[in-house]
Image (tube, rainbow, N blue to C red; front, side, top):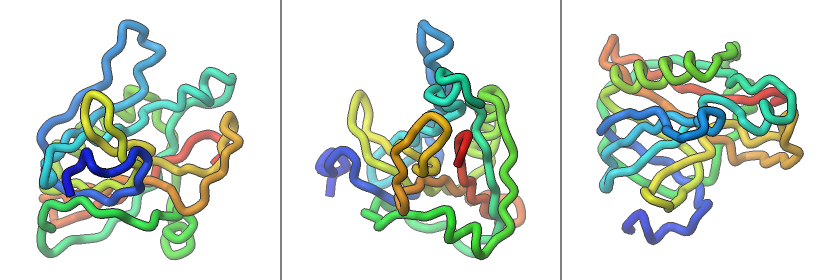
Length: 180
């Protein structure tokens, strides 16, 4: 199915190889809150990953992103894919793994995401489909209620996983905001 045929908000699991990375640009520096990771799936696709929570920051809360990492190994690089997915729940990962969340400022998140993506042989992401100027996946973070957001979506968390060449290591990043 061509990517443009998915409805906005469809929850997807995607996997592909790195095409490039870019920090979001804006004439207003306070609006810059994403790193874009472009990957080759059966079609080019943009992963839009938050580097700051503008909603928390603008409401007077901590805007930093909290990152939890789960490491394991991979044997073979998967084929490129795009598939519907029922959704993730961070609680499932936290029940079976020790996950320590570390806070990152926007520049630190930008550096972490870009350097990790540049080391990856394959990148997977879970999140919601969007189509604007490009097709992509966003909401690649916890969807539980936060300090500034009352809406509590269970089972729709997004995540990103990097298959690194170094020791065939996989790095799954779980991203949370203040109050999650």
